Image 1 (spheres, one colour):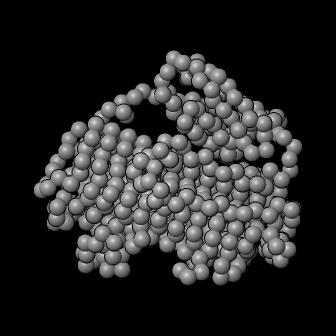
Image 2 (cartoon, one colour):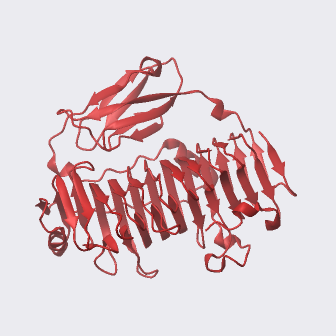
Image 3 (tube, rainbow, N blue to C red):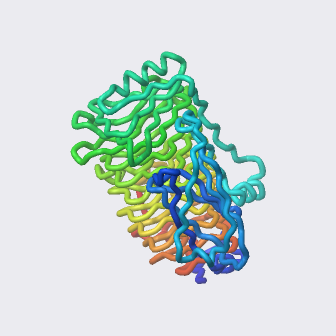
Length: 463
């Protein structure tokens, strides 16, 4: 490991290059129902590690090499759980095929399943932050009122009807639904499809701003589940986009088993909301309108949980931009291949971000960019910790094959644990940071700066 130090070293490095040398095996396979149809969002648990199947029912999980047999469980809401005892060496080159049996409870198709946060995350949170981190609150669902639609039926009329009855479910059967105007989402409504590969909502030719937005000044307890939202290349519209008011925020939104792709602006762009959950979702190939348009843009949000999300292939902007976000937990997420930066965390009230198994690769600029300037006065450098994220933890992250790995300014009370960095120019560039590094590998090396004039000029302004 190389450490290039300029001025006072403000980073503690403990036991690096140790844990990540542990050898891993990959277990992969497919989970189906009794009719051999792939199950999206089924969960696989091996010891304390977990993963979810994608839309095609496939999964791949990395586990520690061991000669001992161990239980692996396969489960999905509405299906009987299976548990199998085996050794990874026996399945290393052989895919696992698991069939789960439906319990015959129709409402389970509409119901969200809560995210299992890996035990290691909770342990480290308690050790480093005590009880300071606030976990998300889930939306409440109303499952007694259900309207079932076919392609060609009016989704908006169904949403309005369910909302007027005090909440319920709008269920979209298999097929393609073309939007000719923006869809206004309402409180206490769950919009549920038959599966991401089966229910497709498409941006129609006349929708040139937003595909899905809000229908009132405050919208609460909304669920989007089991469908794909597809944009087209003739308008710079957003997929799901809305804002709120600081003194009257939206509350409790969840996206589960959702794919949003092909939008010129943000795939998901939301602001002023408390408690947002994105579970087993894909946000890809969005943001071709320019570098300020991203796969995911979260602004002024307290309480974010992202799990098993793929935010790869942003077209022009970033995979994810976190602006004034706090109490964020992102686990088992993949972000790769971008023309600019991978993620950016910035602005006031940015605090308590925990990234676990959050992997970034192949970004042409910086994988993780955490600035300390005022965005609205960015060409006049002001070094202010209020504009930089504080209390950040990276655990078991892989930041590899980017031009620069992480470039952070005035980030304090933070940790890099059990993580691997291997990038082309710098692994971590830290300006006046207090970042403790434990059991991590930096193959290219880090640089520590005490003055912004020492900062690489190629990455001086990265908005």
